[in-house]
Length: 406
Ligand SMILES: [Zn+2]
Image 1 (cartoon, rainbow, N blue to C red):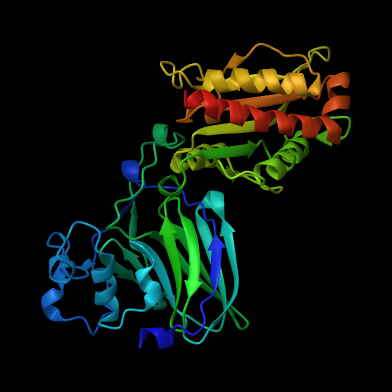
Image 2 (cartoon, helix red, strand yellow; image 1 turned 90 degrees about the vertical axis):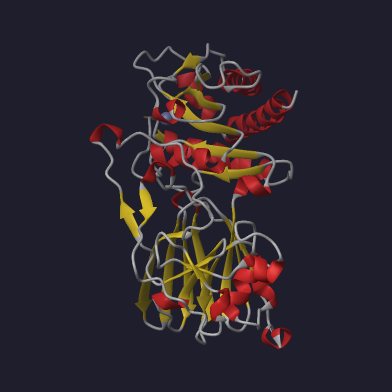
């Protein structure tokens, strides 16, 4: 019967970066009534409620179904409890964490992701409601509005990015859910509780958004950060804006990175947007990335000052063979060599540059020449030098991974 229901299956792979907000309890799932058991067919004797909350529905006694322990992975039993005995084949493949949207005869229009902001918007032709959005997490099912409570954060800690850790799998994977109808389109706007790679599939009854944490999927993760963006153009010179040069270099770098399969690469931006510094560093931390490389251009009131300058943290991994300093040294040597720009000494910014201070992993912030220096500017504004810089960063990552694995 299940087979008949899966007449057409389309698959969309959507990388959605979803930042964690869990650790320090920026948000916590509130214990409240309102969770609904959507499984009318589930047999009563397999149903079980979490004693402490009395409203979070736990789907089934794993032992009864799989012979396993209730605390271990219980995908099949969870799914069987939702769907009764008719488990869609697709559901079984979704893993332990998944968002389902009941189709209600809708047609998928677009899926829009905002990776850095851990958001995904699913546009549908037709109509769905909040009650049609179901979340399976571990062996629990959530429906309706996600219930979160903002926890008091002292003023002095408000700007401090926290160490972000994934929520436990028995918690709702959504932080917020909004439905917006415009004409015949319905937009389902989902904000996740953590960083996920999202794969969207569908059968006749549901759209399935399966959620996987990137570091569980990839061995090597790199984050590339083109500095500034949007209304923040950074420094400037000769009619050029820093933010545009940073982005140009990263786009050339992306061409190279797209050709390789050794490292999974995430970007804080690939267009003229402006994620703030906390968002960028939290993104990298939440990804458990192996390294972060940020691309900037420099400025000095003294126009004679010139060259490549790489900022790093002397605190990060100070005891390790591979750390921020090692990465910075590699980037500095390669970028200056490739572009012919002077190599300046590294600068430790571990105490006074947000993105460096709070970065959990080796990071290097490359200042690719001075826009206030005429000669540097004439070089860094050319495609040739920008491509050379991109290639040097590429080789830096390669060398850095070699060092990290020694
Ligand atoms: Zn900058």
